[in-house]
Length: 237
Image (cartoon, rainbow, N blue to C red; front, side, top):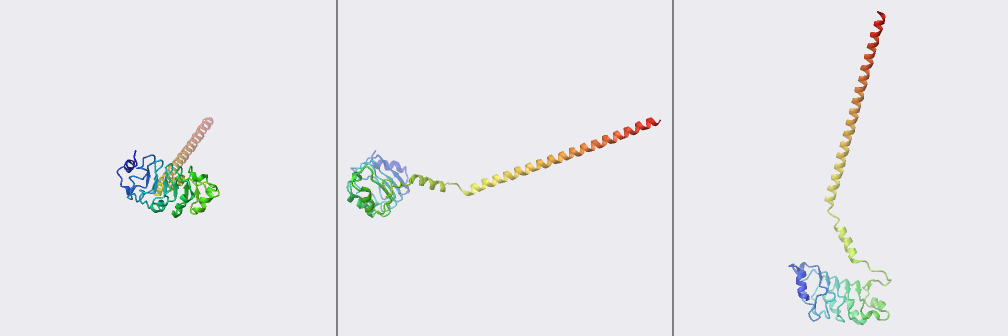
């Protein structure tokens, strides 16, 4: 599928200005150029064009809010300076599997002042002596190169961070939680009140039974005493 048609499908009848993420992986570029992407995508923050046959950024529109750009497995060999013009706020750039050979090519990324993470896996440049030291020196703003910083500490998983943020934001309305908690407390109080009533009632019944039993025994003793008096009278006669 060509890139322009893929973009139309991904829009799903939405306005380009409503799109924050766009994935065009494995679509076909037009003669190595971006096709169908316009500067109407003003809110775009994430763009993925993996394996689309890109060779140039000449037709890449201005994307001022773009922060993450996936361009692995293309045929890019230069013109990286255009990224700082079209996407000045990039923080993450993946150029793995492209035809980047020289440090001078990467030097063009110096103007991406917000760039924190750069991936150049499977590019010929990685075979250069002191490749990592040289890139970090050229691009002091970059913290992670090919997934690791200068001390070989691995970059945090951005997806996990996003999930954590979503988890914090999506904890649910506190009002609903409080209402449920109140309902539970009310239910507990009602249950305790009901249980207390049953206990008191049982005590009252027990006391009544005890009183009735005592009264019965008293009557029985009186009847026995009267019987003994009658026996004494008969003996006297």
